[in-house]
Length: 290
Image 1 (cartoon, rainbow, N blue to C red):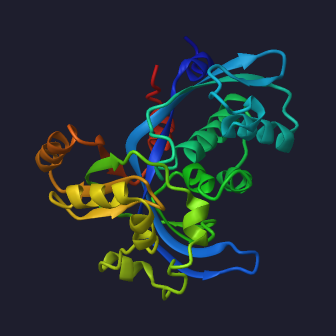
Image 2: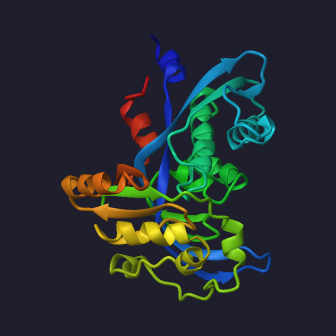
């Protein structure tokens, strides 16, 4: 099989992200919140495959129930790439979901970013990472980090990104049986919006709060319950606005022990955190998933 054929036959990963810290340091005139956050990837990922379509149309192999195909973030990403470059190619996008929906792990944004990155290669468009990040921002605030592909310190509304290196550890993630409405949390009266800006060195020294935590726990008791249960094994945190909570472990043994103890009660995942997105690791190594 030729290289191009192998690329088309491959499954491209769309990994989850964790927010290791989330501070709300202000608000813009247009209502968007100004944030400081740290993103890191985990190996847990959706898998996406692309099928060329000579008609030039962008479609989904398995459309989501209740979501118009044209509104799906992956279809929007492909059409955006076509519009930005004048590309006439078509594609059918096949998404194999592994990440929980509405959990704060960035699954939809990651899927959209993988579409941008993969089709940039498959269609031979040669857009820069910066251009892909710019296109991604128009699809959602979290899309640029997935197109960037490295663990990062982010500011602004999430668009000012610089790579950082943080400890790679075993991670246990709980997905409570609820969907947190991000807009509702950011509109909440009791939300902290005036945290003091910090530096990366402050984060490294241990300032790793999530300003959304209290409001989310007040409104979603199952998130609070998950944090309590997970905190019996390690320091439990909320990622983004949730609903997922996570804990990091220095040893695989301890992570497996926590996972085994929690899986009877919760939807739980065992994975590893990584500073380089599995998507970018795959492209560098050429070790494509078939």
